[in-house]
Image (cartoon, rainbow, N blue to C red; front, side, top):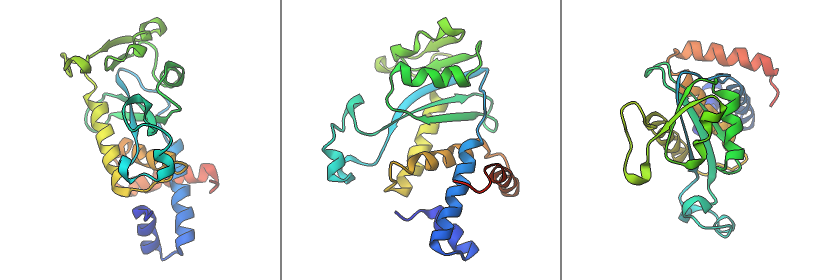
Length: 214
């Protein structure tokens, strides 16, 4: 895998490839902890799967299961986005074991403030959210319903599209490295309103918190 970010750092800083790789890993680790602690107001929640084209996967991966449906061997991923305008919306994303309630609920309960509105698709597993203090409504994608007034998941769907395009452009990411690549994309989205100088200053402040450890 030729990681464009590592190659760019290597070129600009004139570091050896191994040193540049370690530096980029430290930066991505800092990005992974620089996330909004809580989301509130109107939010959208959704789950999807990420992974390369089935035909391009190694044979040992293809032997593990079907490429179709929820039984796929692709990586499940869950996200919540807070609506706050084009420049201020914030997203949280988690790689999960599966898309069952026991895997997704904790992220919602720990991250989304009670009393918030959560819009989802028609997955039945979300319909218990009002019992936990959330206002919940959904659109039924299976019935061809994607928008009903303010009820939709288009912001989360749009983010998934950008994330998958980004990861697809890199290609060949090892599963063990995937969390940090996702964390980088999440960070860039959440702080897209900052200038490059402001972004660099923010990353540096988090690098000092982890003491360069990764």
